[in-house]
Amino acid sequence: MKSKSLLFVGLALVFISIGLKLLEVDWYYLVLIAGIALKVTYLVTGLLSGRLAGGRYLAMLFAGIALVGAGGFLKSNLASPVPGAWIMGAGFLLKAVSIVFMVVVGRKRRLQAEKVMS
Image 1: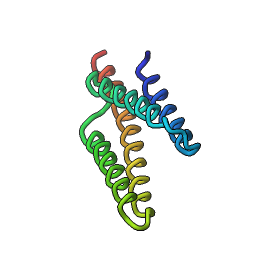
Image 2: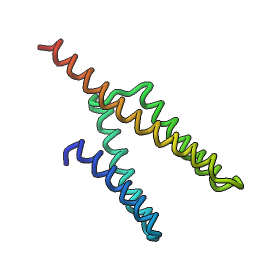
Image 3: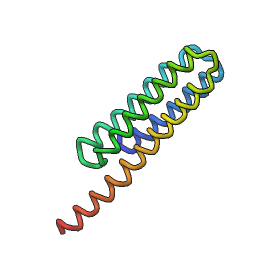
């Protein structure tokens, strides 16, 4: 399986699991776990092979993960779930932006390195 396929199949599975959750299917979390595992596999292989840029974008990714977790905690423990939902949404957005930056900057750096080598 190509590495880009891992990312897009993982994203598709995450969106499918959201739909299953909205339809109140009990086993939606199995599809969600599989989607997240594929995305993590893409990130790890991309970072290790040098296709993706690390550094601050990886820190952004972990900050997004922390925001999603904190938002979920607040959503379940506060009287109003609205602040938790906003924090979770911000975390999801930060994660998406960091992955896009990893791909774009990693591709740019790889093309520059190939240009220098030739």
